Amino acid sequence: MKVEVERLDSTQVRLDIEVPVGDVNEALEETYQVLREQVSIPGFRKGRVPVTILKSRFPEYVNSEVVRHLVVPAYEEAIHAQQLTPLAQPTFEPPLNQLLVQENQPLPFSATVDIRPNINLPAYEELTTDKGSVNVPREKVNAYIEKLQAQSATFEPLDEERAVQENDCVRVDWECFVNGERIDSESRQDVDVELGAGTFHPELETEMLGMQVGETKPIDIKFEQTHLSPVLAGNIACYEVTLHAITEKQLPTLDDEFAKDLGYESYSQLYGFIWNNLVEEERSLQVDEQKADLLEQLIEKTDIAIPEPLVEQYVEQTLQNVQRQLVMEHKTPEEAGIDMETLPTELRRDVIQQTKQSWIFDAIAEKEGIYVTDDELELEIRRAAEQQNRDAQKYASLLKSNNRLDDFRMQLQSQKIYQFLIHRASAKKPLIIT
Amino acid sequence: MNDIYQIILQPQITEKSTVLREANKYAFVVNRAATKPQIRRAAEELFDLQGDIVKIHTMRVRGKPKGKMSRYQRGRKVHWKKAILTLREGATIQAFEMI
Image (cartoon, rainbow over all chains, first blue to last red; front, top):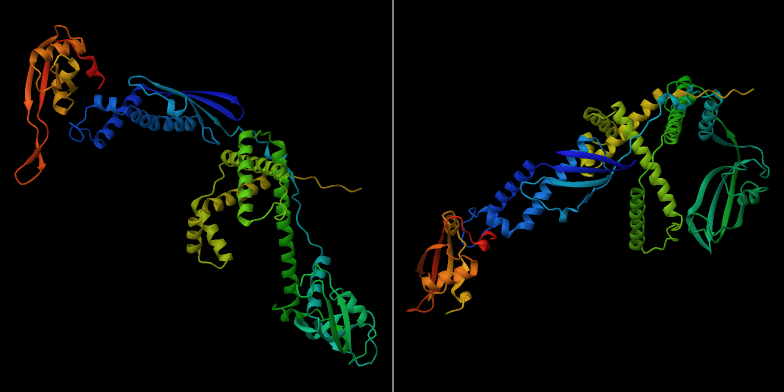
């Protein structure tokens, strides 16, 4: 097979392919054989029709069959041999339905196709990212523990009798009425409230100042239309608040006892656990940052032109999908919160970004041989299944049936690539503050 | 019976006639009343075979019995006449080559 490759531009090539005489004749012969078994022509027994008759009776059929058998495989072979990555279906010249096969003649045709351009990856060392060690200051851990402490605080009634003052803690009941009807879901009994902590409706808090123990006071509050509770929104609710006691907030002491209540053996273990968690959290944040950082640099440092037809096709298709979805849901774009004017630009930006990322990653995977083996895939599936408390076998078959196994593999692969990049990238110079 | 198009009716294309072609023999369905001289003249004119026809064989083919119209009447296909023209070596009938 003769193949000539001509680059039309960085993302388009024309392949001039010539299928040799031998292949053409072989394909013709094969087609006649198959056809002979199938047709019945008066005057001939089945399977005994001579080629000359077949030729004269079914020229178009034979032609299209031979084209089908020769052209696409030849094209694929050429693509494979030239190590090209096509992005879309090729256009053939002449078009396949006009291509004429002739016996004892080679079959020349040409195919134009969009390909992934060659990507010149920057040296990985040129990429920089923050590789500093993660540290969590003690204050952060302390703050976290204080939050825990506040959560398990107890409220003890005060002995002295006085009116409610600002920043007091109080134990109250309240009943909520809207239009004279009691709302159960908004009524509470024996609730400890810390005034001034911002956990309570501010108007209620101010109205409660000056109340005496044992007093019941009706308080009217007008709620906004936008209030989250549909019963209250836009209504005037009357709260009948009964003050049981003025209390004092008592925080538990931070000792082994406190740790045991939370399910740890000792205070130092609790402290260590929290510290570890915070470090872990910080580290995953750092990794996310590193990933974003590296991706941005990669895209910036790699010069890629994305074929316009590809972008347009995607934008068009997505727009159509969106419109179909809207029609199905009987919504106007405004109702669904979609701006039809800016959407194409947004989509365009997205597709360009995504395509660049996937091409760069493909190129890296190819260059560095980073692939996900079946064993790794299995291991990762088992881990994911464990995290979701599912049976690994069932989870795997579920992925397979949803055709998501490939997605899963891709995800793993990009994770590996990120790891590789982080490993190879240079550390960012720390900012020196003078 | 002077119309040549009424004499030679259609070529006979079957497995057997295809084999005969190798011996330069061509089979036709002809008018049942046509004679060999008439067939010769018609063929020479139709296919431009002046002096190329060596021999003409004719035969009357009985239509096959098909079905039963009533208790005493049997149906059949029509009887017809077949003519096999033997051409001299090298001569061909162009129209046949296309089929």
